Image (cartoon, rainbow, N blue to C red; front, side):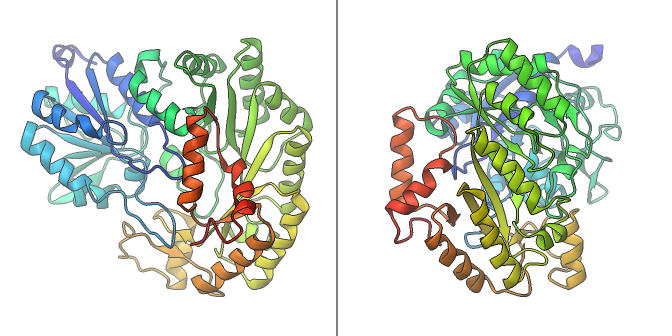
Length: 474
């Protein structure tokens, strides 16, 4: 930061606008990195987590003063084709109230904003937005506001100019930020530990894969950018000091390379870090040695991004893997006695009744891990799915994708697809289709009250057997 800007320390309010608690409330790790970057730039940061501090909202508006407010939008909607719950409806009113109270710039960011930046800036009437990573862009924006320097060179900045919303080039790639214990507000972290049973860690950013529906490459870039093993293990140790007994690695794909996984795991073992952890894994290019190493380093839960158990559909989804890859990876986890689940998207491009039934039959070869299935694919701009839906006439160039819009194979209607999924789930209780009813939600609350940590999907199939009438019906 230059001398002119450093002469004034900004009072910044960072707001976590996420209020979604299904399937678990997720600690806002992105705000931690932005908060740390602002601290390192000499600014004073206050947090407002609307999921945790709703009762503090009036006090903050009545007794505080801020020079800038940043609002993080984690999700646009619930990505569930039946419910289609939007999470951005209250943001416009919040922005208006901030402008009325403090007359200061409001900046939107987060993964949800990065997917639909122009639409969300228009909807909310916020002053600026940042797509992608905010650690470099937000301090740079404060510098520009303070010194009057042009905004044009701030990568990823979204702003109004000449009556239109403009995006300054691609998102910036921030340098690695070193986190300190105070960057995670203790009272907020404690809430997520109590209600969600875990906190989270990021070991890298970026995704080089090209799954047709996925927005990770758009948000984080297509190049994997790893943090140092020392920094990652330091995060684990900080979580342990804050009372966490379980952590989840939020990388889109943890196993981006053997060397990355091995270096992280060897550092955890060397530092004797006792926290158990889970992660997303791509079910491909895994080995017995690597799986055993992860287990010795504390891995207890794997969430496989399988998406389908039919090779034909995997090809249409542009997954670049096969069911044999999925089965081999699943068997490695079973042999290592590591709990695992698979996410499946049914009814996407190329899905037919034949491929759906093939997927059901293949799932029986996996030894009954939990399989969480959703029907239909949410369409986002910039993805391969967007281009396909456009070509097939399911959407138009001017379609409003802020409103939840889904791709469904022309071989099905939604009710028919759900009937097939639910019928198979009745025969195979490890398949979970839909949302939990209040009975299961009460069970989850009791488990958390008793100190159960980690993901609770391992309890889902047991609940399905206990309530065969349909705990997870739509």
